[in-house]
Length: 102
Image 1 (cartoon, rainbow, N blue to C red):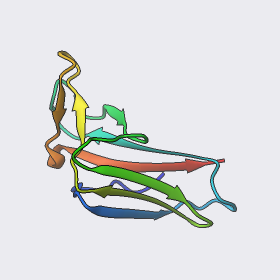
Image 2: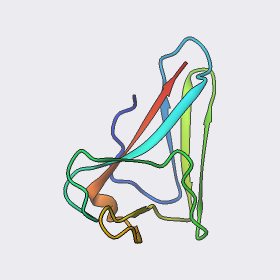
Image 3: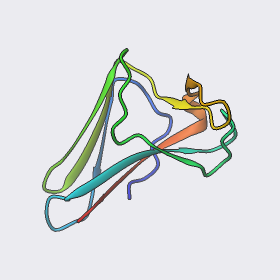
Image 4: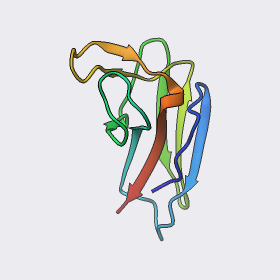
């Protein structure tokens, strides 16, 4: 598990050593809420491993010692927990966390 990345910035590459002895078979990226927003509470997690928004993009890759996640020309949006409406997050209220495992 990576350190929490905050603040989350668009057009940014986040890179963390995964500590495994080989290229990881599985990886995950998620946003962890640090306050209250969109009816989430502190500690709630939203999986963004396969996140995509038409205004921008994302990507991820794993290599021998590093897991890389990038955000390009976009923003993270999540579904409001109560209404279901897709809404851009306040990036100061969330942290990006990366996980890799075999």
